[in-house]
Length: 316
Image (cartoon, rainbow, N blue to C red):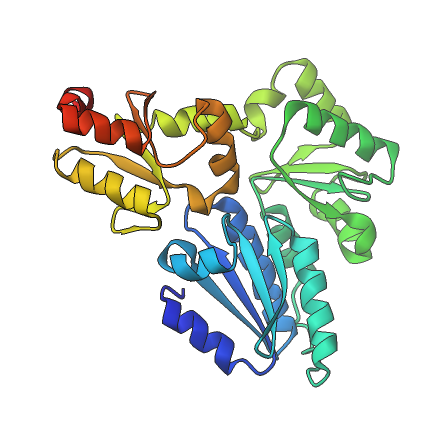
């Protein structure tokens, strides 16, 4: 994994074909899905170079290129940035690579590595905790059973990945035998078949579905959990070793005088948190300091409490 500004620049300057820089973080599950997809593409195209970049270690480059969330992929043709894809959008990543490979002109696709169908099906069923094999996509279902499943998943805010079985006949026919289930949609959980629409509906009616399938965490719940994850929590730009704005640097300097145990969250790595916390706390700027889950304030208040001597009692 690339972890220095210089290494990133060197990769770009030396690139003569197609380069993908995948800005990632170890804690992000969507990053793992994107990395797996890029791995398959790099096997398909010999002229494609893929590198994972530790977003937090190249803060200046990230800020210059407006990378404020992970996963984010930058696509270069020779030395020129052609496309940026943010978020878990595997189809767009693949489409962008295909286009750049074509534009490059001199790169021929490698022969696809021979993979046993069962091995491929196993990999697909395990590509996320919950995988739905459907006709079409969640946004454009192509049968009434898929539409019903997607509506149910949307209502329950289920976190899942999907595969359009209409896009690959080998998967469409092979999965029926592999899972011993003749119809679609199919829902797989932790690599094991959960069932089709009827089973999912039955589990929902029995109250089992909510406790079985992974559910998206609401933003407010996520923010509350982050704020309460440590007694003293600082939301800042960058981290204590490398603050990325003067206000964050000053705040870290003040806290250093109190020998207090605190944790930080770099709001530049997650735009959802960055924007959502402003509304949640009704405080429009950063940094924000929380003690015991309650907002203490921003830099002006922290500095004022520091000068008056009140900050020490609040931190204790």
